[in-house]
Length: 442
Image (cartoon, rainbow, N blue to C red; front, side):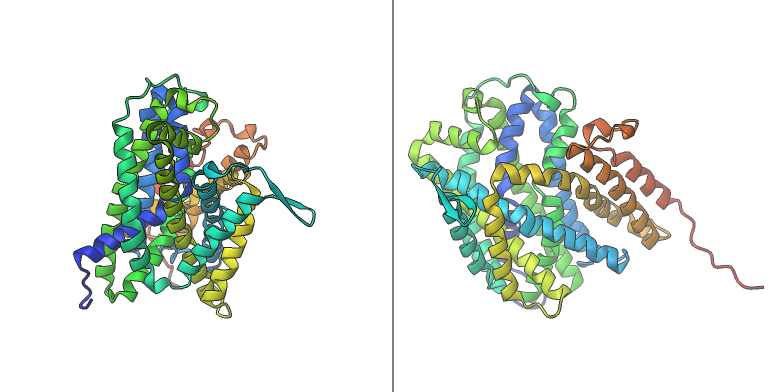
């Protein structure tokens, strides 16, 4: 590969790899349950989910491309580093990466185990035996794949992802042909605010946060492939983003339809993974469950690899005394440890954190697009992100159960989106800021 050119197959391989990195745990378990709860309001809820789970990650990748991988360059060094560290920890060892191993266990392994409640005692700890063995095996494989990042495009984009896409295509088509029940009545927040509830639900995929990091990872992979010109990197990254977005939209729409038409298959379920498992079991039996197990395991594995690689490369660059391969091993061990907290507990802990930090990531993506029109870009970035953070923390405290009723006068406060209007106002103000005039001494 020379002259900053990629073949068509390599371009699609890059796009498929990008899709595989995003398609992980939350992408498969949240849409079916959201569709079930939204019922007759599924279309609005699905639109909101697609905005934050497809539109924003696509926008995030393009924003990274527009800035040549320096999307935080206009922030003060300390603030940029703090934001990057927070995002990497959230999408890495704290929440997203461990969740991939948990979902792979819950959907890909647990249905095939007779005694899934057996426990093992390690000191004073009581751990689920099958879950511990599954997550250890999962992150060992992820670690081995992550140790050789130069082969990511070949291992993930050209080998694992085509298999994953084929299985997902079969599953998606079967869902679209499924003659299910009529959508029921909306439940909870989906009754009055299905659009905003769908938007918040899309936060759980963590894909907008991941897009800021995956974009830089993809640029690094392009460099390894000989794509060194900035314009060429931008072109191929945008193409990869569009391919990934199309794949994600297909998966989400089919899973929302499944949830809304599941009927009795969704009775007494607690998450979308159970709805998906019940559907596959009813339509395809044990062979279908094996198919679903393969799909989920591959989807979660490819995402875990992308997250571990991105985190390891980031902290290697951040702290010169750290080296890549030991970091891969350490992060893999941490992920396997955190994964044994349990899926429901991990999700409940992550929601307030995501509600707080997501507005900052969205604001960063949004202001990147209008930066060429700003007369004072550095000041504008700092102002807009500060506003998004302050009001995002208010939303996050509310999501954590803290009484923040004193702020209920804010627009969209009840929907958990109090940050939206103040952030938009801050961006609008920044568009009309005069250029800073330096006064000359008399």
